[in-house]
Length: 267
Image 1: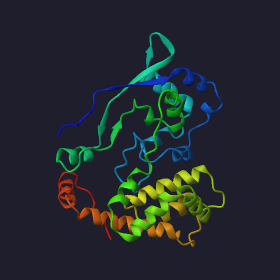
Image 2: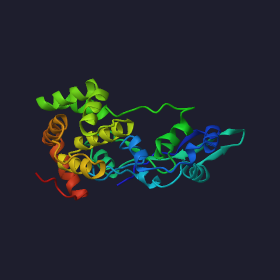
Image 3: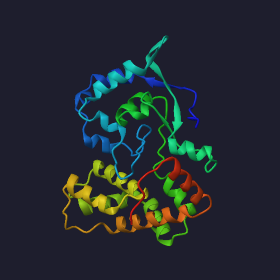
Image 4: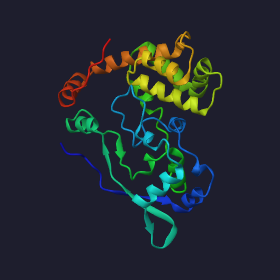
């Protein structure tokens, strides 16, 4: 199978901003697990093979200081501009995941999301990516894209209802869920809840979410699951079953099972 790898793309980075940041106090604060939660799930470096595990490759930065991460990145990947010391360049090669490439090769889909490697600024913690690229580029948020696609295709009434509710006012909904589980609602909780909702869309079980909330976040084990999460989890599993039986779904699944053997979903 061809790797469908792109030609290297040269990305401009802001060395002036990077060197300024290296002198700040923030750059010398240790990167923590909470900082990972601030970054969007499924980032360019984070090909999560098991959607029940929300860790991304950005967790390799936990315990390091931003100044260390940034210096290492610049030394490894940045090519200085010979005429302008305030900017540099990195060469990034993009390719789809193995599964995305297999589906395209078989003709089931026309395109798949592509991922850059470690040289991609987007693989860095969000703050560092922003420092390096915001002067030259705009990072578009695709966080609602897949939900809109599901909404346009599903015929499940409850799935339509929960997706419309989520898309209508996500910040208010996440705040309601956050205050249901936590006394102190904050941006880190908002980011974590977005990750949880994304994982439920990939058929993560609500029992797994509940276990995480109790063990990792100290949520009262006697507190019932939030009603929206109950509805959303059930609807997403039905949407999976719905799409799996439509059009090329059965043939695509059969091909993936053969080429990528994995544990089948229980229940």
